[in-house]
Image: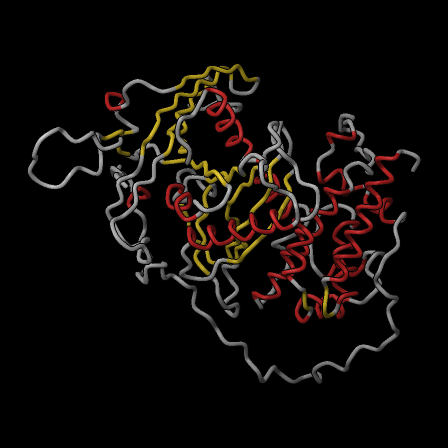
Amino acid sequence: MHDPDQKAALGELTRFREEFYGCLTARADALFELADAVLCTDGPVRSLVGLSLAPEHQRGHGALYDGINHGRVDLARLRNLVAAQRLPRAADDRIVLAVDVSPWLRPDANTSPQRSFCHTYGRGKGQHLMIPGWPYSVVAALETGRTSWTALLDAIRLLPGADVAAVSTAQVREVVHRLITTGQWREGDPEILVVLDAGYDAPRIAHLLADLPVQILGRMRADRVLRRPAPPLRPGPSPGRPARHGAEFAFGDPATWGTEQATTTTGTRLYGTATAQAWDRLHPKLTSRAAWTDHQGPLPIIEGTVIRLTVERLPHGGEAKPVWLWWSQTGASEADVDRCWQMFLRRFDIEHTFRLFKQTLGWTVPKLRDPEAADRWTWLMIIVHTQLRLARLLATDLRRPWEKPTPPERLTPARVRRGFRNIRAKMTSPASAPKPSRPGPGRPPGTTNQCRAPRHDVGRILATGEAYQRPAHHKKGTKPRRTG
């Protein structure tokens, strides 16, 4: 450990582990060793109880479940700790945040409360399924370039009937405040860019976060219709009130587009030639107050820049359809357009993190009944991932015989995890040694459980109080025209 960078990285990782231990207020030793077991276990995590067999977990399987079910974590302190670690930034030293929802599916957990119907796809051609589970809204900081690394900053479990846009807005607001408090963002730095997928109402979120130093970049469906600014008033008296909206801009009708404000063409290795067109000062025409019940007066006009991205080909074949983006700023230059669509493509890096959580770290493996226990396990996954990120400079490439050599700076989280046991041996553990004890007698043989767990229905109520109905665009043969 003669390299100054590696010595500093080891000290940073050691301090993070000590502060993480201080955030555990009950069953701290069991939870801390459980996180180490996830980090050091060979191969993917197949079962929760199997982690008790790892050498890093010195306690029995009873202490493992006791820590998950009855442990306590100071989440406010833990969130500040995660936000204070070094974060990846874009080429212009800008923090880029991605917000997405990933479900922990629990279709057979009838005794687990607060389940919702989670939207899933990819289980069949053209299928959209609603499966019961616990959806989690996750915020992560993105890196530049081709990578599978992200910096996870927050995770919130969505309750049944939750307004996803309102919850995500409050979540992003708290994350931005923590970044400002911890010194990650200072006055004069570029504004934070928040990247959203098509499931979010980007203009509404931009309006709700207008008082923060953030910019919103979201994808829109290809059937949307936006409006141009209202035309200027003609001189002289005119009947009726002035118009609030201008001509239509229909994504599916090129005749309504007009002349674009900026156009860029970039050559890429995966997609071939990428062409981006931008139109300025376009806004949705808000017609429903369902999402604006707290807004006083007329519904706002939220202007932004629309970007249409087309590529020459897709990496794995298939038809390359255009992608429509809405950016909350106006007056976009060619550099702004290029930065926006390139950072939107980086949003898909969070999908690699979700795959790592579920397939390698075993996020959705435990069959937990209590949703609060699921929250504790989810935050353990975030702490595990943060330790892997801090250990990138310390890891060696323990590759399999069939794998190609990889430079240290290009190691994936899974390959960093292979050597974490060697890194852990260089640090001291704040957890105390286990005390000898005997297992309890348990339930007497031949007796049944007299305290049956209650059954809970799956929440299917929307934020508006209405019952869920299958969206019209999920039905075959329907192509609605979205004017909002």
